[in-house]
Length: 207
Image (cartoon, rainbow, N blue to C red):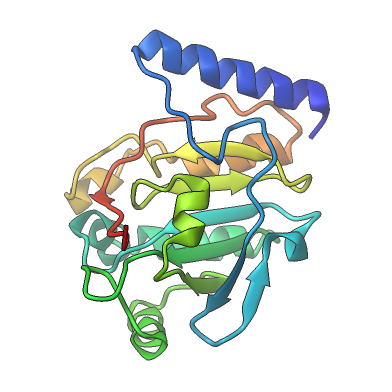
């Protein structure tokens, strides 16, 4: 993506938020470099953002006990997105930032069992019980979605779609912001909707 397109996407996101009456500022700002990270997945492997330079990366904040998350997994929507985009070379990282003792906290074995049972297909599931990765990105809800371009720039931050409910029936006809951002960016177009208000269960941080 060219620098001019990134500037256009950033300006568009800011003007949209101001028009809506609020501005969401987080460490992962659309149009700015994505915060670097190092996190261990549920298989014990360490992942660093720098490992994926030159690739699109999706970060999906996850809490398997959240009804909003269950909507997308129970309706097989999240799995379909993971399979579609990883097949196109996108790195899809699910992130669990629930602290020990909080809703959504899982051991590596419990996380692996969920992936198998749901036939999920992320590139990896990152376990973040300290909340360091979640705080670095300003992740607020499960799900909260971020898209990072091959240059390491955040091009989308917000909700997965425009239907903020727990009803699986609302998966039909929903506008998926993540797919829209990836489709536009992969075709060297500015991301039309680069920032939205995330919805879901609040991330259950340790602090």
